[in-house]
Image 1 (spheres, one colour):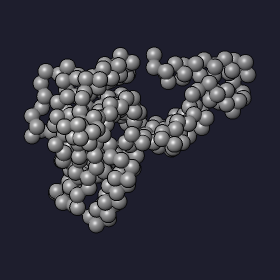
Image 2 (cartoon, helix red, strand yellow):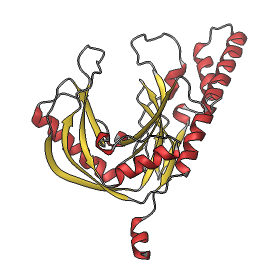
Image 3 (tube, one colour):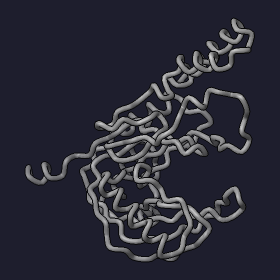
Image 4 (spheres, one colour):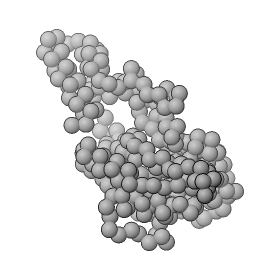
Length: 276
């Protein structure tokens, strides 16, 4: 049982016990007792490199931060919102991320591009920007053994730092349909870097996969928004940053929650070059 599940189970039992004691009448007191048993809500804060963040999750570089939210509301079941997002599955994937300054520059470029193109879309926050390297798998319920297998695969990766260049916007013409029935096409920034394919091969070998996709099928990109418009490639002044680590991410698909489970630092390139 994952730690969060165990905590929620304990909270459920505290809730039932309190309800029995109070005859189910003191709802606010029940909720307060229930919240106190959970390692989340406003009381749970995590500090990533000096940034205090609430437990609604997160994605950025080694300077990970979390998205704001009041977790305590999740434990007041006065009604069920049928239109609320539902979790579809637990997903594991690995990625690299830009440093915070680069991420803010990417967001500024994306906002300028959307404004010039007349696009009315929600732009990805800098703390959620990432370039996927490998989709490890989707699970009905993520088990600790699945996470540990991925950690062991990461331990087999010995990658040196490499430079990444972002050079233009374009849409992917996928077949996903949004809730309103319109196409759900990602607008991405194309990424280039000599280390991408080598990194993907090391991940595949670490996971024990016998076949690796050909390099021409591997298209690194950073998604900035989603929408129905199909946009042809448009070049932009390049943005560059150095990839220094690989992240293992647990995504709660449908809820837009990302959890960083593990980091694999790359070998520092400058130190290697100096030794040579």
